[in-house]
Image 1 (cartoon, one colour):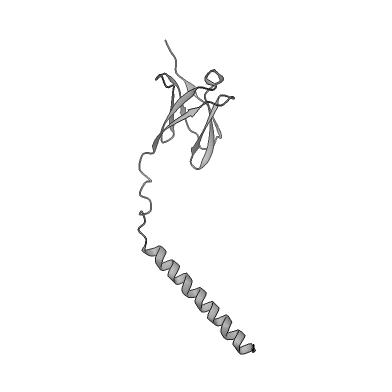
Image 2 (tube, one colour):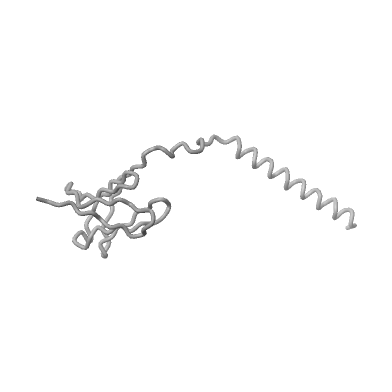
Length: 119
């Protein structure tokens, strides 16, 4: 193989790679996409059923990070429901008893619970 043949082969490979990138970009651009910033001002809510761990915690992902919610040892092993509305979490038992409320702080990994008082 001569040097000119190697040079032509290299140029051909480079051109093929360039054409492949163009096809991939065109295919990506033609797909239907959700417009940017569509859900920024929407309310985020979810309902989650979980079991309290042996330390009295449950975990919840908030703003892309794992948060540890302190429910309490009294509820260890019990099933609870987390009603999440943006940064506000209501902790409720399956019987409907409100255990407490948590306001998620993005700066903290462990989140304290505010207990509800029963009369």
